Image (cartoon, rainbow, N blue to C red):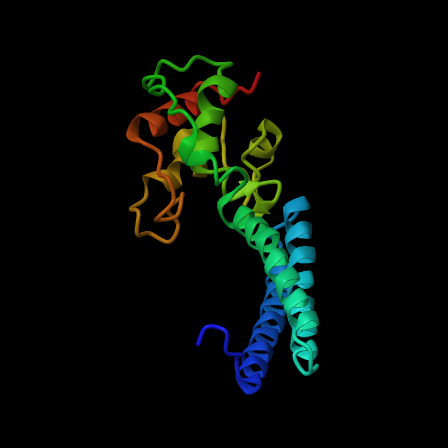
Length: 216
């Protein structure tokens, strides 16, 4: 039974179903790529590998008409191989670089207590908080709201809605104001389901901004 050839009609139907699904995925992916929130090498690699994946599915569908099954099987195998980088780089755009190894990374020690973060400690106390809670959506490959939080220059520049840090005024700085909104509020950041800053971490951000939001 296991060696019985699959019915050609079923093979053709599944091959063309895969080809149509691949074409639809490429079309929607290209449309979403223009939303302005994604950029960088990860986007380009995802685009190229996804197009290769869809093209190989279409090729496999055409080869399924041939009497011999070898060309069809080779094209299908190549399509499966192309699906791996396409999926990986797509997940990188969604979850941020290093999403595979993030759960294995060693836990950082407790954050500096509120009010104990002196000026000049951005790299040591503030950037690690941003890396854990914000950078997956605000990095060179995925700039949600045109905001980059993986570098001091990006934090200074702010996003499409203006500055996120107002030195000396944490109550006017969206970076901490949005963290204090209810989790189900549409303006709350990070979004529900993403790693959330602890109360101590928000206090560190607040203290850093209150003390002048220095980056040196």
